[in-house]
Image (tube, rainbow, N blue to C red; front, side):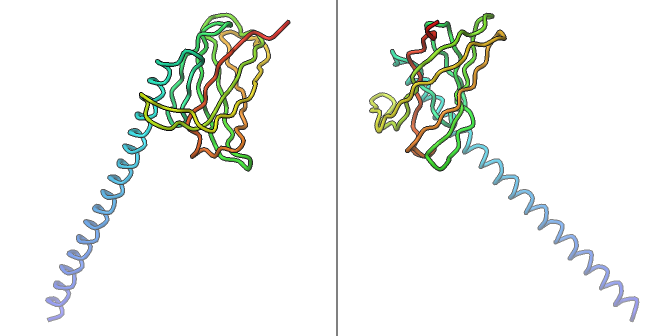
Length: 179
């Protein structure tokens, strides 16, 4: 009788352990699916921003647009040469948004000292028919580079606009600094 009872107990325990293992595997699978869904949503949002940024830049006759969330550089032909610009480290702070404008020279020459205008605000409407709203601007300057090819990081403080409100940044009027 004891052996029979022990045998039933062992078989029952194995069945319970097997069910727990399956539940654990199902939980892991659900977690993996949720992680993949989150990644796909982020990629879809980034794709929309890249498409919008490219469309705005194709129509722009003054400067280059960078959209937060696009995570893609844009090229600007300026008086100091072709520049590759990107927006990095966009984050909230007490006064609005802080970000870094990364500018890379495309030639093998160091960048001269330069200045330019950065505008930011919101976009309303569609990519085909849009309006810039609540636009603010600031003058930015950069010292001459010593190394080539050159990379310049310009910290931006975008007051009065949270990262969620920030629809665009446009950089224009890049000019060499007066000697």
